[in-house]
Length: 223
Image (tube, rainbow, N blue to C red; front, side, top):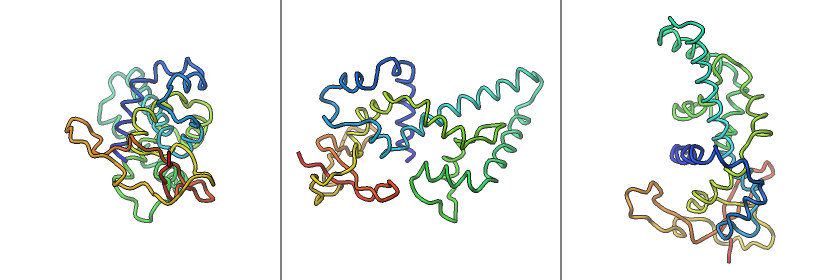
């Protein structure tokens, strides 16, 4: 998960300034043979929610920076320790709401939060904490509904999703489901400069989902 979000942060930095000017249909057409003929960005985004959540985290990071800059403008004498104390206070309030934390955990990891909350997971969840505010869930819902850069979602599939073997659509009754995605389908990279150790460029995958829309199995789509 950490590696995925690192890659997505690079994509966000590269594309967020210029992606929104072209319509989704035109953008898909512009990608040509890089996308499957039946690619649908909404379905891909639904199956890979971390891509949209990366955009949410980037926006929250920006708002938190504005919050801190605002404190320094309002009170030039404020010390780092004072700002850090306010952040800790905000963090304590953030984690005090179990409903909020459970929902954000489910969005981030696509599974129920365990009784023992791992430290690594808490570091990830904390990226959704809006300093000085308590409306994180409303903010996330609104951003996902109204502000996602859909062309960035498409770029993510082209730049990383194909290599990682991410499913781009749900499986249909016409898909053969005997071959699951396994490391045997991937090719190993030997270039130590490339963070992708194994990649699935030669294949395309669909997902079998449960009644809640969560992925159960990823299958190879036969040519």
